[in-house]
Length: 250
Ligand code: PEP
Image 1: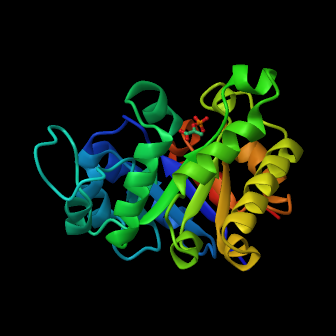
Image 2: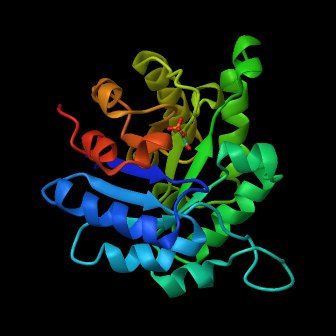
């Protein structure tokens, strides 16, 4: 069985003080959950967040990382720096990084290998734009993102990854995919991972849905056969709303 993962992505929101306040409020609201809870916070809040979640099961992740060990990469953050703070997870290839900061399937692949080499758990984001969807190209795009992004990985390495299917037209727009559509694309992704690696491997990979998830709609996604959790942007910024997502009713 794949354990549900509820991952928040704060994007470029929250100072250290705000992070501390949020986590202090969230902690008692998800004490009893059997689900895995993760918050991917800005680099500057990682250390504060790690300290603030002590004594709880909440995990802390980063939103990006470098593919290089170290060197002349102004503004970048290495895996070693994340490990130094005790970070477990890292988002790779979020659509905002692909659209605005030059991430490609190739750099996603490099970053993914670097994360795995360093023992960080990667959440690889894939998803199509509105135009690609309208042109009937969703699965072509997803296929390339998966095949190129996972290039060169062993079956064991792939099995330890997490994928987030995030249709770009649903991110921050309030326009969610229907649970059926999301499940269908997630099944497609799992099927391709199964063909590329093995069914056993693909059945171990958690595949999340992301795109305007909120407490009011999350249960309908989690009722689907292949959706293993959520990657949550806007709704992860308010502790009560995020707790409502974590504690969705089956
Ligand atoms: C995201 O940032 O990955 C995301 C899905 O954002 P939102 O939940 O706000 O659509």
